[in-house]
Amino acid sequence: MEWALHDPDHGAYGSGRLRVGPRGDFATSPSLGPAFGELLAPQLAEWLQALGPGPLALVETGPGEGDLARQLADALAIGWPGLASRLELVLVEPNGGMAARQQHRLAGAPLPVRWCDWQELAARPLRGVMLAHEVLDALAVERVVWDGALWRQQMVALEAAGGLGLEAGEPVSEGTLAQLAGLGLTGEGNAAGRPPGWCSELHPGLGPWLGAAVAGLAEGVLLVVDYALEAGRYYSPQRSYGTLMAYRGQQASPDPLRQPGHWDLTAHLCLESLQQAAAAAGWQGLGQCRQGQALLALGLAAALYDLQQPGRGDLADRLARREALLRLVDPAGLGEFRWIALGRGTAACAQTPRFLREPVG
Ligand SMILES: C[S@@+](CC[C@H](N)C(=O)[O-])C[C@H]1O[C@@H](n2cnc3c(N)ncnc32)[C@H](O)[C@@H]1O
Picture: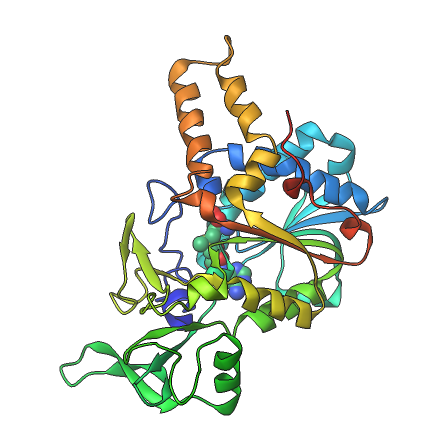
């Protein structure tokens, strides 16, 4: 997964081959238009203001096409000019191919913009807000498979005919077994009711990623937005093939080995695993909910109502904006995403996040 996504020459992101957006390989919330950033901006402004005077940063990790960063820079500069005057935009993007397009998208943005890596952030930690929008689902996962007698690692094998296949490998380590037990995947000498061949994913990359993020933020909030399931749903006996999926050209495939380097590979997050890894890394949980609920709390219904008022631009534009707003909260799609807020330091953690409070208007 690491190679297929991040190899600088052949990786889907490393080479810059993947395109995010409705006309690219897959759509994300910010790629549907400016509404997502506009609705999120008041939440960020509230967190940033709570940090008090002095220079602040909006750090976006994995910015993709740079759409969200651009939307937020525009919305904050217009709505909160005083705050924006002491705010810089810092982008963490390990893939050169993607960073090149972000530079293009952010040319002329109304905030100072710079790119940096985790080491630079750790050397000079910032105060502000960090975003991880559809990034943690791209971290390499470890797959485990129940063979009817033992839990084994699932491996990628070079087959005799020359293709790639998935095979059961070595039995998992004692540490992994303990982790599986914690997730309810072991029972009396069996896999607690799971049939032979049942497989799923663990997320060993989460701890190191959250540790790097905590080292880069001296004080503030990290907002993770991603597909995430409670452990009970993630590892239910019925979900026998985990959540690993490949995406290309708006098509989804359950085969992660299809044309490596040409498809996005993604796996859902397990909510409890994320929360445990976050606590171990030093983050304070500030709450979580589904995107549909979060965006309603941030004023999505009022934005929809506003589009119906006379004199709000031409009809085609209004219909497109309405469609985008509805897609953002669709319970069968983007509305199912989880917003998970994690804090560090006290100032921005003192009150319930705006997106968890009663809807506005
Ligand atoms: C699915 S795209 C999300 C793009 C954007 N956030 C959006 O929602 O439209 C994943 C992005 O994360 C980047 N990425 C992958 N692994 C990363 C990591 N470990 N740290 C930071 N960025 C990463 C990719 O290069 C890409 O820009």
